[in-house]
Image 1 (tube, rainbow, N blue to C red):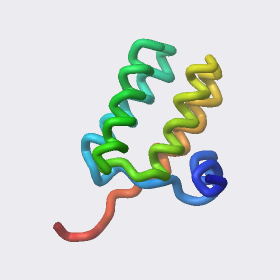
Image 2: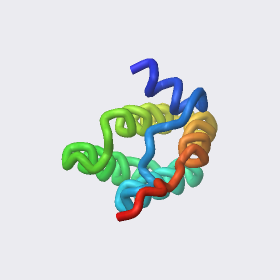
Image 3: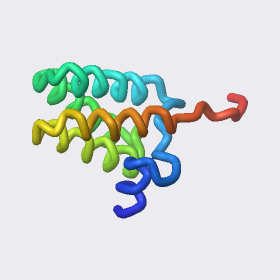
Length: 99
């Protein structure tokens, strides 16, 4: 748990979601929800993120990191949520594995 918190806050690399288009789209939607302070979109995106975790497209670590951001936004801590999410997004790296 501590590792997920630290990586979401910029200490180390955050859990990677960029290789799954659906996961990355959900992170982009979360960014829109947080930066526009739209609670309706926040809740819709939170449900999508939960679904992606349930279907094992999103790792436990990724889910935990995003849940902390979602909770900050639900608490109307929009700026801290945006900063943490920005760090999460900037830490994404496309894998170089050939598929």
